[in-house]
Image 1 (tube, helix red, strand yellow):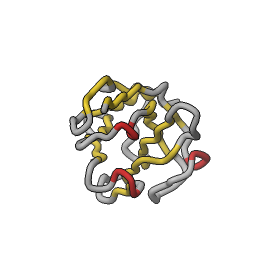
Image 2 (cartoon, rainbow, N blue to C red):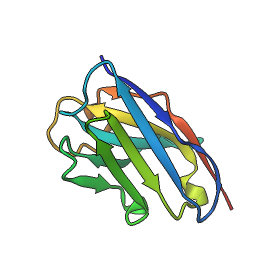
Image 3 (cartoon, rainbow, N blue to C red):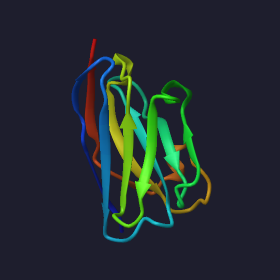
Image 4 (tube, one colour):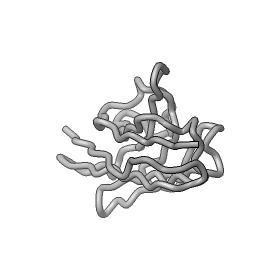
Amino acid sequence: QVQLVESGGGLVQAGGSLRLSCAASGRTISSYAMGWFRQAPGKEREFVAAISWSGATTDYTDSVKDRFTISRDIAKNMVYLQMNSLKPEDTAVYYCTAATRTNGLPRYQYEYTYWGQGTQVTVSS
Protein backbone atom coordinates (compact mmCIF):
# COMPACT_ATOMS: atom_id res chain seq x y z
CA GLN A 1 0.00 0.00 0.00
CA VAL A 2 1.05 3.56 -0.72
CA GLN A 3 -0.16 6.55 1.23
CA LEU A 4 -0.06 9.93 -0.51
CA VAL A 5 -0.34 13.22 1.35
CA GLU A 6 -0.58 16.52 -0.48
CA SER A 7 0.41 19.87 0.95
CA GLY A 8 1.12 23.40 -0.20
CA GLY A 9 -2.34 24.51 -1.20
CA GLY A 10 -3.82 27.80 -0.14
CA LEU A 11 -5.23 31.13 -1.22
CA VAL A 12 -3.31 33.15 -3.79
CA GLN A 13 -4.07 36.09 -6.03
CA ALA A 14 -4.29 35.70 -9.78
CA GLY A 15 -0.83 35.77 -11.29
CA GLY A 16 0.73 34.27 -8.20
CA SER A 17 2.46 30.96 -7.62
CA LEU A 18 2.11 27.92 -5.42
CA ARG A 19 4.12 24.74 -5.09
CA LEU A 20 2.23 21.60 -4.21
CA SER A 21 4.05 18.69 -2.64
CA CYS A 22 3.05 15.05 -2.46
CA ALA A 23 4.71 12.87 0.15
CA ALA A 24 4.53 9.12 -0.39
CA SER A 25 4.89 6.54 2.34
CA GLY A 26 4.40 2.84 2.76
CA ARG A 27 6.61 1.88 -0.13
CA THR A 28 8.78 3.51 -2.73
CA ILE A 29 7.07 5.16 -5.69
CA SER A 30 10.24 5.16 -7.76
CA SER A 31 8.82 2.70 -10.31
CA TYR A 32 5.44 4.41 -10.66
CA ALA A 33 4.26 7.10 -12.98
CA MET A 34 2.78 9.88 -10.88
CA GLY A 35 0.08 12.36 -11.66
CA TRP A 36 -1.86 15.36 -10.47
CA PHE A 37 -5.60 15.77 -10.98
CA ARG A 38 -7.93 18.52 -9.86
CA GLN A 39 -11.62 18.90 -9.17
CA ALA A 40 -13.40 22.23 -9.17
CA PRO A 41 -16.77 22.69 -7.47
CA GLY A 42 -19.54 21.18 -9.55
CA LYS A 43 -17.12 19.70 -12.06
CA GLU A 44 -15.60 16.31 -12.71
CA ARG A 45 -12.08 15.50 -11.64
CA GLU A 46 -9.68 16.26 -14.48
CA PHE A 47 -6.14 15.40 -15.42
CA VAL A 48 -3.54 18.10 -14.84
CA ALA A 49 -0.07 16.58 -15.24
CA ALA A 50 1.86 13.33 -15.19
CA ILE A 51 5.50 12.34 -14.86
CA SER A 52 7.16 9.08 -15.82
CA TRP A 53 8.76 6.78 -13.28
CA SER A 54 12.20 8.13 -14.20
CA GLY A 55 11.16 11.74 -14.36
CA ALA A 56 12.42 11.96 -17.93
CA THR A 57 9.07 12.63 -19.54
CA THR A 58 6.06 14.69 -18.56
CA ASP A 59 2.60 15.45 -19.88
CA TYR A 60 0.23 18.32 -19.21
CA THR A 61 -3.31 19.24 -20.01
CA ASP A 62 -3.37 22.12 -22.47
CA SER A 63 -4.75 24.68 -20.02
CA VAL A 64 -1.69 24.46 -17.74
CA LYS A 65 1.10 24.02 -20.26
CA ASP A 66 3.86 26.60 -19.85
CA ARG A 67 2.50 27.52 -16.41
CA PHE A 68 2.73 24.33 -14.36
CA THR A 69 5.71 22.02 -13.90
CA ILE A 70 5.58 18.52 -12.45
CA SER A 71 8.72 17.05 -10.95
CA ARG A 72 9.80 14.30 -8.61
CA ASP A 73 12.54 13.54 -6.13
CA ILE A 74 13.02 9.80 -6.18
CA ALA A 75 15.33 9.78 -3.19
CA LYS A 76 12.79 11.62 -1.06
CA ASN A 77 9.76 9.74 -2.42
CA MET A 78 8.18 13.08 -3.31
CA VAL A 79 6.33 14.59 -6.23
CA TYR A 80 5.81 18.31 -6.81
CA LEU A 81 3.62 20.58 -8.88
CA GLN A 82 4.96 24.09 -9.38
CA MET A 83 2.11 26.35 -10.43
CA ASN A 84 2.87 29.79 -11.85
CA SER A 85 0.71 32.51 -13.36
CA LEU A 86 -2.28 31.12 -11.55
CA LYS A 87 -5.75 31.98 -12.78
CA PRO A 88 -9.13 31.90 -11.00
CA GLU A 89 -10.08 28.92 -13.16
CA ASP A 90 -7.26 26.94 -11.53
CA THR A 91 -9.27 26.97 -8.30
CA ALA A 92 -9.86 23.35 -7.31
CA VAL A 93 -8.91 20.57 -4.98
CA TYR A 94 -5.67 19.07 -6.27
CA TYR A 95 -4.98 15.36 -5.91
CA CYS A 96 -1.73 13.44 -6.14
CA THR A 97 -1.96 9.97 -7.58
CA ALA A 98 0.23 6.97 -8.40
CA ALA A 99 -0.08 4.66 -11.39
CA THR A 100 1.18 1.16 -10.66
CA ARG A 101 0.18 -0.65 -13.85
CA THR A 102 1.65 1.43 -16.65
CA ASN A 103 5.01 2.61 -17.91
CA GLY A 104 3.49 5.50 -19.82
CA LEU A 105 1.99 8.84 -18.86
CA PRO A 106 -1.59 8.05 -17.94
CA ARG A 107 -4.30 10.67 -18.31
CA TYR A 108 -7.33 8.77 -17.05
CA GLN A 109 -8.39 8.19 -13.47
CA TYR A 110 -8.87 4.45 -13.94
CA GLU A 111 -5.18 4.13 -14.79
CA TYR A 112 -4.19 5.28 -11.31
CA THR A 113 -4.18 3.13 -8.20
CA TYR A 114 -3.42 5.30 -5.19
CA TRP A 115 -4.85 8.72 -4.39
CA GLY A 116 -4.21 11.36 -1.80
CA GLN A 117 -6.91 13.26 0.08
CA GLY A 118 -6.34 16.45 -1.85
CA THR A 119 -5.28 20.00 -1.09
CA GLN A 120 -7.38 23.09 -1.80
CA VAL A 121 -6.06 25.75 -4.16
CA THR A 122 -8.03 28.97 -4.38
CA VAL A 123 -7.06 31.71 -6.81
CA SER A 124 -8.72 35.06 -6.29
CA SER A 125 -9.24 37.56 -9.11
